[in-house]
Image (tube, rainbow, N blue to C red):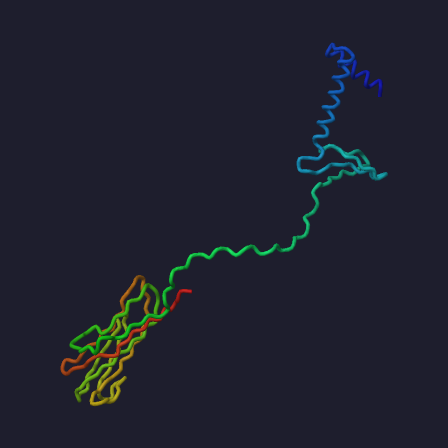
Length: 231
């Protein structure tokens, strides 16, 4: 060992032309720098430690990253970070947050309109009632009662603007006919339809009076039920 040290010192002296003390100082600095460089790779950048395990006696020696173990040794990589532990218990509930702003009013699922202002005398086609609904799909039901003071039977055809139409007769054996009441004859005409609107739309109920005689329309009602009500 002394011979090796003397050789290193002599070689440094011949290269640097320095005295023995200066050479010894340079040699120590060289050894320290080499040791620091060597230690800088233990542990590795990812935190692991490389080692060589002797298969003969179980001796373990730590080596730099990338160093090849000797014959009869097994290379090992030791992680400084252990396995992830079990999940901890649930923490306590946080404080209640502030109340948010009130939402917009939802639209109703059912729209309806009823006739007001008394009976409507039917002279030709007359719009008896109207109901405005927003865009959407609807099941539409309507009814209207026709009344006549004549002993003759009078037809009262009615229709919805969505397409459905029906006819009633105020006297006789016609379909949807009711018998006289308090000296008047009357008939209730029901209508039903299904429609989809892309914009706000007015659903109208129109009835037509007879050419001769007089029929009045009263108690009309239109109901539109949304087929896909808002949740």
